[in-house]
Image (cartoon, rainbow, N blue to C red; front, top):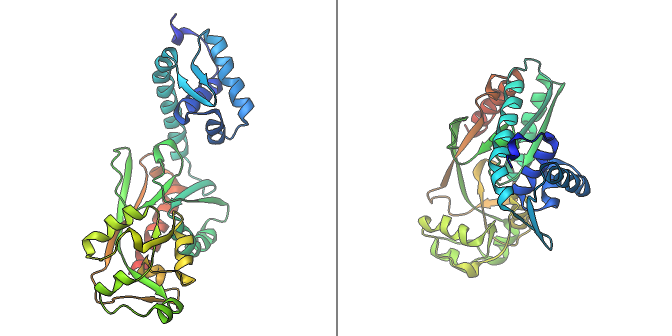
Length: 298
């Protein structure tokens, strides 16, 4: 049977696509903002319309059948086309209103962006801005965000990116911690201290290795994938943490360690989709973010 000659509803196809990509009904329902029973009914209806089984169900896990794998290629192409239509339509918008999402790290979203958002509201009071605070690299092509602030340059040709500056970072600790444990005079003395990881401790160790920091996994007893939580741990005297200098400067209770050491550096990239860059609201937010972040780092 030629499945692509069958007529079926896009909502059903979208439910199938999300389930195939997420691997479960519950995750797909969260992605599409549907209830799990509703999404399950849409997938079942598509199977009934096509007369084929698209998923093998074993317990709570789902595996694509051969028919499901064949259909996925075609439905994914339909999804890409639908995304592109949405991008083009949004790119034609010329009114400074509507909704825009900006994704940035949790640290930047918490400590850096609020002043910019206050200024943005003065210029475009009708614009709704949603800040997606995450340390993951969000997929602009799938419309998870309109604008992204990243520390890596995107490789997709559909995206445009502007490197705004290079941020610097150093080791910081609270005065209460240093009064209890002592201030390390040099890099070698750092081995006797506790460190707080931002995410995976093993990745932190790899990141620190070029600096010559003489610490091991044993030094990392606390940490969090959430940068704000990790920073608050350091502020409460639980250990030493790395933080961007422009963020740490706003906290008088935190002291920079080894001020003469070479700083850690990382780029700040501002990214959006080529289609969205022709939208007046997107262009306004993109340009204001660029100006604000450059001034903030200067």
